[in-house]
Length: 478
Image 1 (cartoon, rainbow, N blue to C red):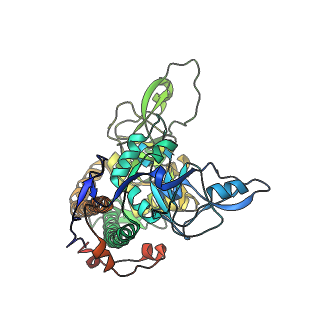
Image 2 (spheres, rainbow, N blue to C red; image 1 turned 90 degrees about the vertical axis):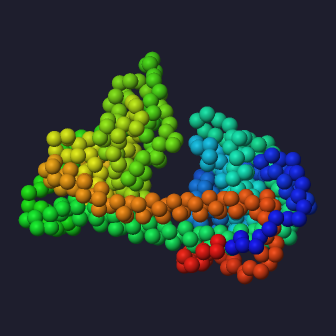
Image 3 (cartoon, rainbow, N blue to C red; image 1 turned 90 degrees about the horizontal axis):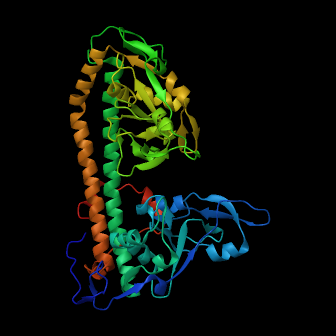
């Protein structure tokens, strides 16, 4: 799609080192000169005498690039003054103003529809463009990496990071004429449509590969590796037969289940020490994410009761239904690490079960169906508890057979895991391409005016674009 794009004929210094040169006829302006900014203080509440509204909260902005009719909003109430000051209009850009994570601030979302009852919620800033700036262009600029870098530099805080009014208003952006802003948005909308189609197709492939991986694991941990082994009824209706010599034992019969630290406890007259602690965000499906591990000040006695040990299988209490009951093995990645109460540390008896075998069993269809059937479920979320985990019936081969099954899985899953990793890398490269392309175009490194004029019109409903499934071949020239 970028074939034939060329730089502009003439450039000048923007005066901003993070932008560099811009086309000669462009300007560089601070947000305070091109936007009206308002920081909302409307929280989720219902008060007598106030008007019912839909509240656009932090989560809606953080998870959605665009705020549209199909976005799910919380019901609340607002005073007449709040509705006037913080009511949202089509073309407004919302950004996250503060967060526990420094790289979660400054995330933009574009309001795409008119709704008299839609009000901006807490922790967000509204940027309403003036006469020489399109909101759709501002949205694209604020989503670029050089703006994100400015936000990160300006963020302040220790346990929670935030942007002051002056920091937001002082952000500098490149500013082309209005007609070029429209051309840039038009071109990037088309480019992103193709990129999103490519990523959707690759994620669908990863889903199919994960189903194949789960099927291989399920077969191994419910039937073993010997196709001719004598079988018996497992006594579990949705499972069927298992090898005759295997045991079926409640998890609590072969493991201890350790609860974690409950946050918010106050300690007085006790010596406190900093300990790293795992949160739900650190425990992903099949692996750990340790790029951002927080610390917690605790008495040593409390920390000892929730200290992780090598070989613990970590299980999250709740989350998306498809990830419920997920497990991954703790290999001592951090010394003296404790865990939050929303994570259980399941500790197998070394004489009965290998931790990696339990982790594999938890990835099987059998285990996932058990946790889905026994979960407490709400909209899009499910949760389990210590009692339910303890009652999970473990299919238990002898230790030497567990070792053989694990070795067989290494071989049997090698090509599938390699294909998943390769596909994830393709997605990451495409996302990097999107980031670089956006930055190059909104800073004028590439002239898209002629190319944008030749593009067909896109549907105006962003939900239609989101739901549209594109074939891989559509993205070959992206």
